[in-house]
Amino acid sequence: MAATTSYNFKKTTVVPSAKDFVDIILSKTQRKTPTVVHKQYQIGRIRQFYMRKVKFTQQNCHDRLSQILDDFPKLDEVHPFYADLMNILYDKNHYKLALGQLNTAMHLIDNVAKDYVRLLKYGDSLYRCKQLKKAALGRMCTILKRQNQSLQYLEQVRQHLARLPSIDPNTRTILICGFPNVGKSSFINKLTRADVEVQPYAFTTKSLFVGHMDYKYLRWQVVDTPGILDHSLEQRNAIEMQAIAALAHLRAAVLYIMDISGQCGYNIEEQNQLQNISNEGIELIPMSTVTEDGLFDVKQEACEKLLAQRVEVKLRSRRANDIVNRIHVANPAQRDNKDRPVFIPDTVKQKMTVDKNRNKKLMRDYEEEQGDDYILDLKREYDLHNEDEKYDIVPEIYEGKNIADFIDPEIMQKLEILEREEELREAAGVYEDDIDEDDEEYSKIKKTAELIRKKKKLLTLKNREKRSRNKPTMPRRSVKAPRSRLDKFQNLDDVESMDIGAEDTTISRKRQSVSKETNLRKRKASQSITRSQSRPRDESAFADPAQKARARLLTKKSQKRIRVGALKGESDRAIPNLMPKHLYS
Image (tube, rainbow, N blue to C red; front, side, top):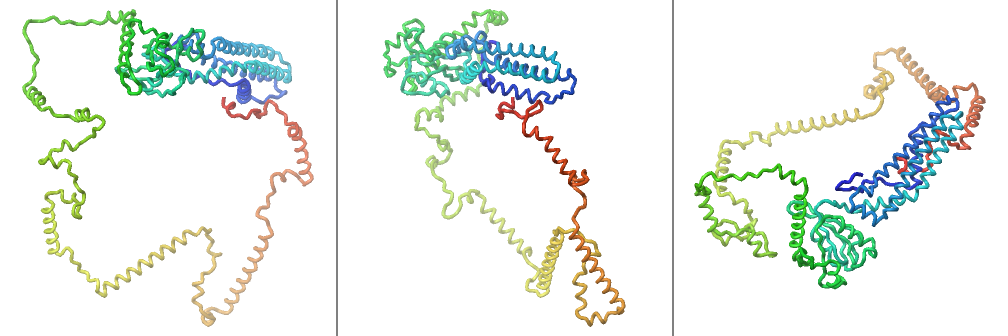
């Protein structure tokens, strides 16, 4: 990681435990490499099959370990503030040792894979190649399992690093420090949008907190530090050392806050011993976070001093000299001694004099006079003939009538015009009806029209019902004669009166009886015969049931070894660890 101004530790990869690491590696090897090999293959193909598995596992381990090593910050490459902070929080030696052990493990795995690939080149059988592959993967897993403590430690460091505030060491910074419980967190809460916990006891703030504010259109970061006690550096704990690291390495305006009331538990002499205020250049500015008196003065003074110091540093640098050499400031020389005053038009002068004499009060002036009691009053600017009517309440309903109806001043004239138009329409006979409803002929037409409408509705409903029937269409011959044809012959006399010979009637009756008998036979036959005469596929290959039974017995015997032993081979896709987070690696 290169030394940059901003650090994002939240993107560090999650470090799995040793057991999870092994499961990830082996399950990925099982999924991403071929799984079927036979002893009938040529020996070169078998060697290549197992060498691929060993190389894939080694490359997978190498990639994951190198990613962990690259993601974690190097103490020699980061800003000194972060290097000291990590040394205080995680112990620099322990941190370097854990990363060094992972680096050593990565090289050991690479050497193991190299050695076993060399041995696999001389494997003379499938069994020997398989055992070499098994030994190689086993040694790699053993190396990973030995790094369990380092992996767990680095995971805890990663989680804590992700919770650290994002502090830019090179930007404009205001650093707040002082004794515990003097009001540092209350000050940063008032000054920025930060929400730091405030409690009436010491060491409420146990780590660094950052807030941001704007001053002169620039973004500033305000850092709240834990309380510092007045004793030697060796006696300070990890909480106090975080504040010391910020004071030592951040280029910032330091605000030393003192509690003159003594409610923090330390008197003014003790607080003065920690920071000798008698030095030149240090100003005392009173303020209160309760009443907010003096907060803006403290903010302005700190920001101005820091800006002046940063500008001075930039001017001393070589880069500033290069920029100054490119700039040319033109100072025009005076051409003559003629006086050229500023020209202001007369209309503008008149307007300026009128505005000065008017002295009109603005809403802003009313707000400053009344303070918290100010209420926005828009009716104050109403321009009426009678000034007393400004605040009169206008009713919506007056004497049972809507006021809005009488707003139009010409409403009566418009009403007269409408009445005249109505009179002219009536005189012209626009509203006269020539049809007399009491006429008999008109009533008959009306009734027939109603009957026609009803009939149409019935026909449409009947057609819809016919269409909605979900029945197959039958051929014309098999459809029975409708009842309407037989309704013509009400009795036997009508049938006898028909011009049909007796012979023809007997023949037709015989035909009807014959057709009925054939239909009965067909129905009986259809009840006894199954729908399909085809044999099932598992029976069509055998000549008799005995041959079929023998085939089933042989099938069961062939599957007995696999079913009872449940052996796992190279093609077995069973994954021992069913936790899904390892399978999506």
